[in-house]
Length: 344
Length: 184
Image 1 (spheres, rainbow over the protein chains, first blue to last red):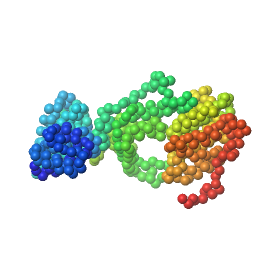
Image 2 (image 1 turned 120 degrees about the vertical axis):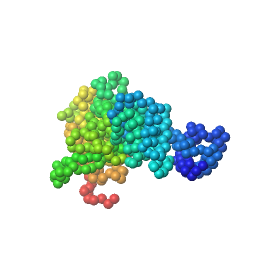
Image 3 (image 1 turned 45 degrees about the vertical axis):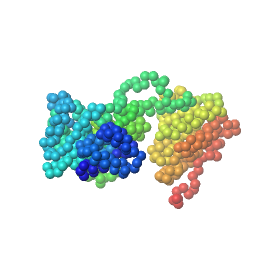
Image 4 (image 1 turned 180 degrees about the vertical axis):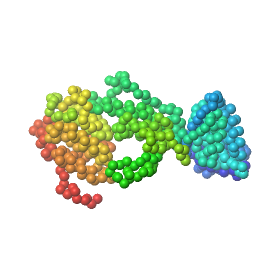
């Protein structure tokens, strides 16, 4: 067993928390029943690592097997690291007919043509997501398994999610992706976040949508939100109206967990009390960042409690509507405009 | 402009009506739940975010005996909203039927100027200013008890005491050195 495999396994075991180690190893299925019994998961991590290394030498696991284990762990815990969304553009006529085996072959062959040494692993998850693990090498060196890129794509949708991709690797991946999915171009979707499930749900609108309606609660007398007949809310109607507008803009129920929204302003400075700044010809460049553990929830609460005025400004409602959290605002358009490609 | 008037409606028998005005709409809910627990008197609580109150409820609204403005000291918006709501009250209310309740006074991030400004406002209107602790159930109960004391007098349920008389005793006063820098 060579040094590379050993280091890979060590790194991986260190990364996986002990509580998850047992289930992950079971799912992997490469331990024999005897080996499984012999591992004591109450031991400290260092001893577990030693144990597994000896097992690795005995059973002859290769890099291929270890990367399988890593992939199983990452698929079960996708919410680590920063994910970026990309969008495929201009599908060809047969883009809708691309199915899994064809995609796999095409992707591997295209990427193999672009990069001399590359290790690609493709796996289909139960929820129709295709997971791709790429270890990049170049003409002179073997693939580096310690810094793999993970790509998630749902076939027949235009969305691709990537993590740990450098700017050198991006054009190679884009090319391979575009060709194998039968589209003509790929662009940055300007959406990033720590939770893969959240940005996927946001883009594919898989959360409760609330639609404008004239009659929001058909049985009004049943919706008593106060506990007591002696307590009465004077402005209940306007509160309900604000809540309806907030939910229309952001959605109802549980919202996808976005961590931040960034607005890059390139607008002219406007303040009547400050003449010197207002007279400047060039735009006043400034970046506004909103951050929160659950940004959409916070914004919806701002709107429903009256802190943000309703109807919700398009600057904020574009986040769920267009599925992005990076905007460049210029003076020409009243709302967020199309952007140039930002460096991620 | 719909002003809230203190004596334009008839009072109810053994009933006291209180209006809690709070921009954040948080503390008023727990206060309301505690206020209606009172057994000696029927307490009706009306909750609002700000004044003016909607015209639609004008008919069904009972005579309001006490208006309480709840101000969160950590929020400037809360203070502004309360100040703006004051102009929608008939001047008759300021004869003992208005009270200010201030929360989060112990918070270190509160600028002292804000508390001074509220104090001056309450003193100029001859209203009492109460401090309340809204995070614990004990704090809510003690705030409720104090409000009930004032409410019962304002509703005329305490013999030999009127709201105006009580407000003379309890109204907020401004210490003469309020504008001097303090040594914290």
